[in-house]
Amino acid sequence: MCRVCVVRGDELLKYSFPRPHPFSSARVEAFWAELSRLGLGEATVEPERADEPTLELFHERSHVEFVRSASTLGYGYLDEGDTPAFEGVLEAGELAVGSTLACVERVLSGEADHGFNPVGGLHHARRDRSAGFCVFNDIGVAIELLRGAGMRRVLYVDIDVHHGDGVFYPYESDPDVLVFDVHEDGRFLYPGTGRAEESGKGEAAGTKVNVPLAPGEGDEAFARVAPRLARFAEEASADFVILQCGADGLAGDPLGGLAYSPRVHAEVARILHAVAHQSCGGRMVALGGGGYDPANCAAAWTAVVKEMCENHENANR
Image (cartoon, rainbow, N blue to C red; front, top):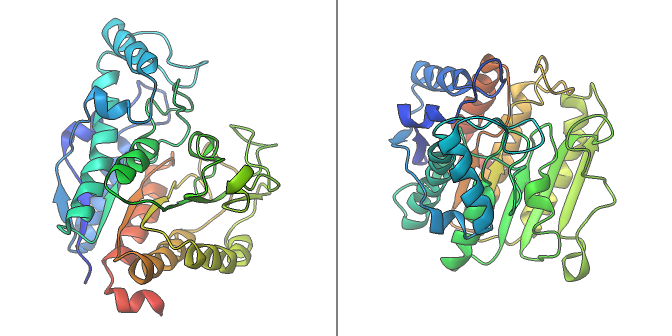
């Protein structure tokens, strides 16, 4: 069995917007409850808080300062209206980022083979602003931290129903960040980006893949994508693998329009788990991302953890 660390602890629940906002702590609580029921043998990692210099590995200082001010005021919005400010939102964002980095650091140290942060995967925040429920971008901070640790090539796979614009565009011209993003077509859903024709710029041409799916598509459509994902991941020669496994692509999500079952999440985790062990000593971290039906989050995210817990020889089955 692989050693998988999962972030658990009440502090992580602080990243939850006031009712009736769909991004609530109920998603994470349902996941933890299902993990306990399944008894997969994962290890617990306490939430950790990133400091401001760490946030600035990816974010502009002006953005961090803006969030700090909004966190003190406790009202208004951090963007055009999707991401509300509240008292303590800075700390909540720092906990989301720091908990992802805690997983990354345990994998780098060899303390764990893989990690999972259910409140990670905040893939819309840009270097200079919050967006789409994402105060800070833990993925961008993690990529910069990994580079500082000598991990040159990072494979980033995103199956959230929304395009991961906050990762794709900052690294669009970077040939060492390999991106494979499957999402609902941006003509029908926020943030309106992620066209199939966008595959990286300059020397990074061909290092990015966008796969927009039509509303209503589900497991059958993803089955056609899976071999392409497997080839891309195998050819990436990555030093580290990051999976953003948003559950908002599952049927019944109140914000998304796709119709996956949790089998999609299990298959993606199986593919990447195998590649991670083949290419980079198993170094892989998965992040919860979106998902606004708590039962769907529990089912999708535990499917990912279960696959990562498998003996890595079985990842090739």
